Amino acid sequence: MAWETRPGCSGRFYTRTTKTNGTYTRTYVGTERSPAAQLAAAEDAMRKEARERARQDRRSEVEALEALDAPLLALNAAVATLFRATMLVSGYHQFDRGAWKRRRDRPLTGDRPVQPAPSAALETDDAP
Image 1 (tube, helix red, strand yellow):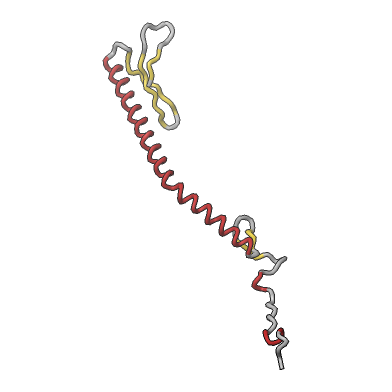
Image 2 (image 1 turned 90 degrees about the vertical axis):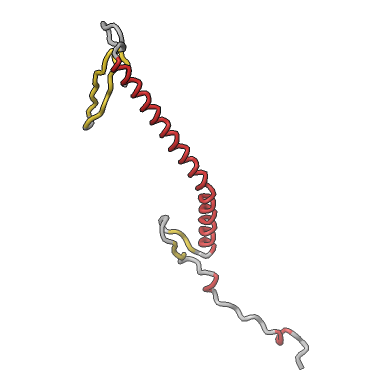
């Protein structure tokens, strides 16, 4: 879809390029004095503008959706960080970016035996 000039020829020619089964084919439409070539060039320009408008519309829609997603992505990152910190503090590790597993080298705080607190009666010297 271009006006082209060739050496040794006077004037310009309008051609359309199409791709069929992976092969590009140029089709001659006419010279610059031909009404068919002028009409084809105008049609191609209108199609090009319509494609560009559609591309701009898609870009603006994507930007609007990304703006809506931004707070959710930030929340997701915060929750993931909080979860990871909780798991690490609890004695777990993430195996190969997959499942969380408990570390074998250190027990969890809940696994330690609880020492009984001394009774209040034994601590006071007021016993008879």
